[in-house]
Image (cartoon, rainbow, N blue to C red; front, side, top):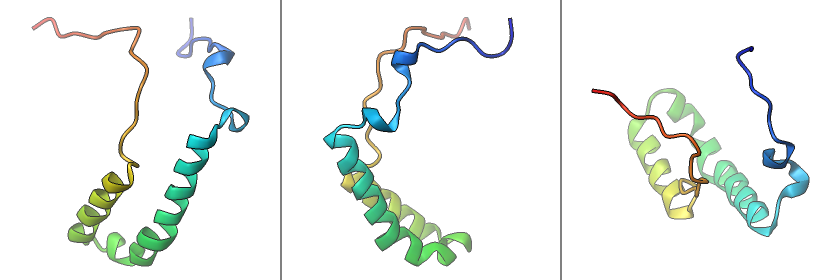
Length: 80
């Protein structure tokens, strides 16, 4: 068996499967990038960590850091 396992086609997200919430998140993300990230790109590339922190906080305020994930079907645990 190789490194990759088969994938159930019903679990693959495709652009056609987007709903209104997905479209709103995409619109918010595009606007955030255009209006807040890209204007400060040079500062970010020069390691302006204060700006990076402010942008992360802003991401959180916009709800772009939150994601509901399905419950895992496999749980990994330490044997220590």
